[in-house]
Length: 88
Image 1 (cartoon, rainbow, N blue to C red):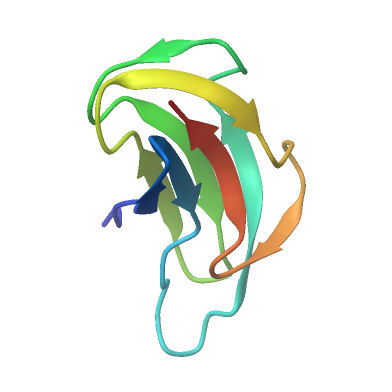
Image 2 (spheres, helix red, strand yellow):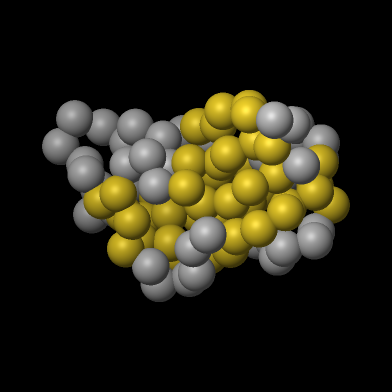
């Protein structure tokens, strides 16, 4: 079952971060990016898919906006709380 995004708003920029993935999961791999910097997205559009040893998760856009920057690339091994993208 897919888990949702983690984000925080600061100065009209939305930070999209890796959410808490479960008690024993501390890292994951970016398996697919669905967007590039400059892409317009709508609320709930797919941003990324991440894989762990136990499950796959999707990260979605929290609101309508534009992807200002991607901070990861496919294949990156990331930890919970890692910044994936910035939205404006």
